[in-house]
Length: 217
Image 1: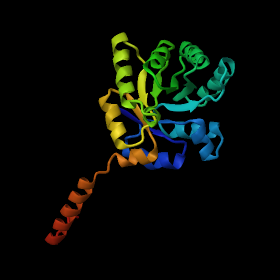
Image 2 (image 1 turned 60 degrees about the vertical axis):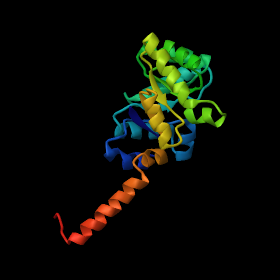
Image 3 (image 1 turned 135 degrees about the vertical axis):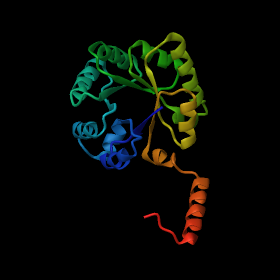
Image 4 (image 1 turned 180 degrees about the vertical axis):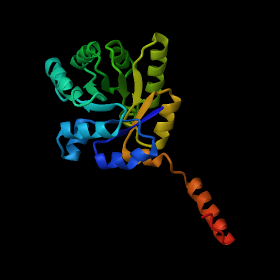
């Protein structure tokens, strides 16, 4: 499963890139606003750092303006993926971009029926929101499983990009549910490596090594 960073903070991306684990980046209007920077400048800088797909979101709600915004975002760099909302206008724009060979990420997906429409519209990625579903008592991971089954039965090419993941357990569950990719906030990304028994074991090894008085170098 590919791992994307859900951030518009260039410093964070630079910090995590050397791990070799960052396969792409997703942004949204809220993250751009938090950065306090111009969207075109931020996206261009991120695209220059990360070779994988970089989602940049159109903010218009009508088809014509979505297409204009998406064309402008896509022109920033070859690896830009235009992010669009799961509305009729958003799906119509998705088809328009698919016909032009521009990749899209259809966001705010909360049902398998919506995911089917996005796939039929030619979306490159579908972003089901796991955590937000669980916030209202629904089964977010179950939705990923439903979409995986639906896409496999009907041989859709759209990739499942699990979003709104709040903790490492969500990430594991998304991988087991068959998501093609997951987008993670920085704190969740960093938490994936952590386990108390790993820390405890390392402390024990270091203590024992210290008793030997040896040095490898």
